[in-house]
Image (tube, helix red, strand yellow):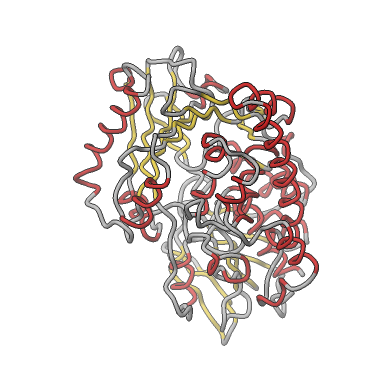
Length: 490
């Protein structure tokens, strides 16, 4: 593994998102002095927050899996997750609702899920689920250390028994057909393949290797931190600060000072110069490249994942049938991905993620109120350069109408506080192509082919975050911070 040469005593981490905080903790554990610079007033980055009329909103990720990765980062400084955060295991992890009126609770416990599959689809499908669960588990074990949790210097790093094992498991086939080998019920196929959208690819096109996301969601377990997702970056930042990291909030980095191939100092918008021996950059790729004066030499332009419209709604209405996470599937499936990825238009028959965090933590809303997070995948601004300032409010009304048509009667009337986020808003936050899900996980943008965390021509700068390796999602982003730290510490 290539590492940063020379002195690395003092490292400046740009960005206090989950990647930057993970990197900071691992660097501190290896004896480095760390300074963290964050443009916002609080830690979290994409895991943002907004307080609105007594409602405590998570404006970023709402699904937490693989908390042991957070524990690993905290253990680098002698701390643990349980010291800082109360995690609530979600049972079920999801509730899936379908256009035919049926519903399936997605349990991470093997026996409970097998019983649920038997109830809704019969004994043959239940046996298929058992085989699918075993395959997902083997896939995860084959990938987590060698492919997801590893730094790559060259595609040749893939060569060896690990690659052969992944190939033997069918990891280089397509996800949709791979799931179909185990279960034939269309509802079950959706439950175990919709996660491909996190990777920015339709299930029929995604590598079967991305079944590991389904493993995380449906086997390893889904959790919720009391206080909301903001509790996670708050915990990581507190532990890093306690271990000696210096945090500068409301601080925007404007340029990097260079001497030859080394970054020697970081300059901020308020005129401060912070000398350093190495730097970890976690902003969007284009921002990091601009600071480094780097131009991508990729022969084909990067492809970005679909975006999302998110409606945050504080409400007087309550629908007990909604679990903490409910996936409301439309009747259409394949056409949905064609619309948002290829045609660049909103879904005509949307599938939606509805999160009700007050199901697990009523304190996130005023007494007697509920908080809802409704996510509708949509085209990014490159696939569909739509005028969201004009169509956003109308699309919001369409989403409310869809929810009411699917049984949430009075959803619109119950809203007393709301916040709508569209691709235009994501773009205003600095997210390329107006998507918070960064670079898509196509084959040409996966593993050693994804934008690297080392940048040519700069000896002591390392990238972290969802744009670089290993990719998008809370677990990969936390891993990216560890990988960045390993480039510096060896």
